[in-house]
Structures are given as C-alpha cells and as structure tokens.
Image 1 (cartoon, rainbow, N blue to C red):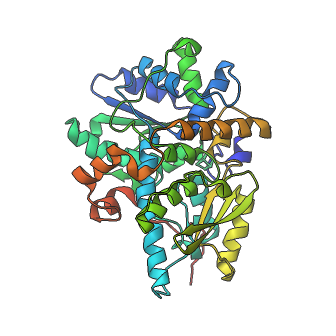
Image 2 (image 1 turned 135 degrees about the horizontal axis):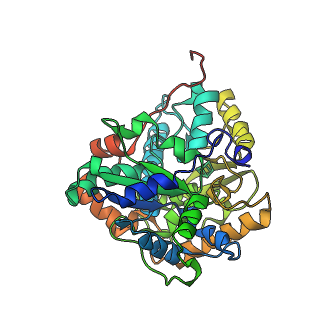
Amino acid sequence: QCVAVCPTGALSEKDETNEVIRALADPFKTVVVQVAPAVRTALGESFGMKPGTLVTGKLAAALRRLEFDYVFDTDFAADLTIMEEASELLDRLTRHLGGDTDVKLPIVTSCCPAWVNHLEKRYPDLLDYPSTARSPMQMFGSIAKNYLAEKISVHRKDMVVVSIMPCVAKKAECARVEFSEDGNPDVDITLTTRELASLIKRFNIDFESLEDEDFDAPLGESTGAAVIFGTTGGVIEAAARTAYEFHTGETLEQVDFDALRGFDGIRSATVDFAGIDIKIGIAHGLDNARVLMEEIRKGTCEFHAIEVMACPGGCIGGGGQPFHHGKEEIIRARQEATYTEDANKVIRKSHENPHIKKLYEEYLGKPLGEKPHRLLHTHYFNRSGKKTK
Ligand code: SF4
C-alpha cells in the first residue's frame, strides 16, 4: 500500500512508537512535538469519525495527554517556509525580468521528500530548479533545536523533536545528514498519522471525548496559508498570497486562488501580479510531475513556478494517513476540511503571522539572509549514479 503511494521513500514503514515512549519516559529529555497540516484532516478516521472531520483541537489535547513537554504545530513552520520560498520566487523573477539569463525558472517546490528523492535520482541535471527552502518539518526542527533550545536553556542533545506526519518518506528525510549538527538531527523521530493513532489507543486515551485545546505558543501559531500545505495546490497558493503582497505592496483582497485548486493531475493558472502574469503549474503524482520536468529539460516549459507533490491529492492522501483504499471521495473530504480550516482562520497570509514576524525581528533577520540561509535552506545531491555535464 505504502509503496504505491510513496514511491521513493516508503519502501519500508518502520514503527517508531516505542522510541517516542522511551523519550517521553526519560526525565532528562525535553520532548517537543510538531504536527503536519494534513494530519488533522484524517486522524479522526482512525477513531471511527467521518472522513473530513477536523480534529485539530482534540489532536493538541491528545498530545498533551501523552505528556509531550511542548505541543507545537508544523503549520508555524509552513508559514516560515512561505516567507523564504515566496522571497526566493520573487528574487528569481526579478533577476529574470532584469535580463539575467543564468537564473533558473521555473522555481519548483521542495517540501515533499519523495519528490526531492525522485528529482535527485532522475533529474540530476535540474537540481538548480527546486527552491532551496527546507520542508516545514525540517525548518521546524532547525528552529526548535536552535532558537527554542536557546530560549528555554536546553542543550540540543537534551531535546527530542518528534514530528507527526501524513508521510512515510519523512522518516528518511529527517535522517539526511544535512539536517543534523554534530550527529544530532534537527528532527529525531517521525511518526505517521497511523502510528500516532496506535499510540493514542495504546495509552487508552478516549480520543472522541477529548475537549478541544490549543497548540502551545509561539511555535504553535499559524495562518490559513499554512493549513492548505496539506492539499495539492496549497503550497503554491500560500506562496502566491505572500509573493503578491511582497511584490506589489498592496493588500490582496481575494485570498482564495480558485484557479489553483482542484484535482486534475496537472493544472495550470496565471496569476496577475499587478500587471505581470505569473504562470503556475501544479502536478500531483510522480507520473504527472515527470511530464512537467521533461518540459523543463527540453526548454519548452512556460511556467514561472511549479508545485509538485508525490501523493495523489497531496499530503492529505499521504502514505502515512489512515488507509483510503484509493477512494477519491475520502481524499476530497479531507481536502474540503483543509479549505474549511483555512477559511476559519483569522489570519490567512503567512507574512502576517505575528509570531513569524517576531522570529525574524528577534532572531532570523531578513528572509534569504545569512541566518535563514544557514538554518532554513538546503542543497541537493546527484543520486543518479551518473555524471552530469
Ligand atoms: Fe509525503 Fe506529502 Fe510528499 Fe506524500 S505528498 S510523499 S505525504 S510530503
């Protein structure tokens, strides 16, 4: 099942719930948990709830019952990803429009590790195209083990960062050496949504009757833009909301980019950035992604930005979610829940998240600056086994 939906990262699904239990029982460890956007749209299914039931508040409450020291949200880091990725998009576009022929366009999203693995194996000649922004999970880990660790006076070796992901490929992503310092990883353990459900059951927590609770501040505060990372088209829509305002200096009144939404395997839309037409491509599923990458290779691609997610529907259909057995109505219900959560948020643009603004003011400086470059960006490797020209 996982092999089918997570083609490059999910060849074996290793249960790591015991590692989490050991960390929680260790009195010398500070255990921090982060939860990806798509998890809240599907976890309820493991407890008999209807597909598309949003369980954000119960999820935070359950994690607290499991006695994590800090219950945070990967959505916070999704807002951070947008700050960096939207800035990178605008930087490349500005240089391109200014006549720089070396700049690589389209910029391709990089938050899906199964996609990144595929790119490194199949398209080693195109490694300059993906955004260098780390995924939200890895940005969170880096901020937790640096900024938060400093703030709460805990050595990074005494902090355990656990991530709850809809994804099996994320287990391999957190093991990449570039996301560690002196052998200590930024994210220590990744559990899938299914593993979290089994942990909640093992601890006899009555999930359905839990009262809603909030995530902890500050790394638990997020916007609607972060929530939609969970669905196909969501990352690029979130980036468009921020890039538009960064570029034009004007308020974006219509936050919903309906043209970027939908379910077709390959979609395209043109977004008007105050007189400049930005052409955007979206692909979900690796077969569809390959169509767009071949166009880049041939030099016929007209897009300025492309979003790729390996799983059908994006992370809501991820290989670590409760099994959907290929039923599209389940994925669609989760997608609906994602857009509902976005619409219900008071703040819906990543750059307006007050905790993100404070993080830049107090610690990071400016997007794409020296510190963000070191802590929030990455590089890619040729894993094809062949030399590129
Ligand atoms: Fe993981 Fe999401 Fe990529 Fe699927 S689309 S492999 S769940 S990051």
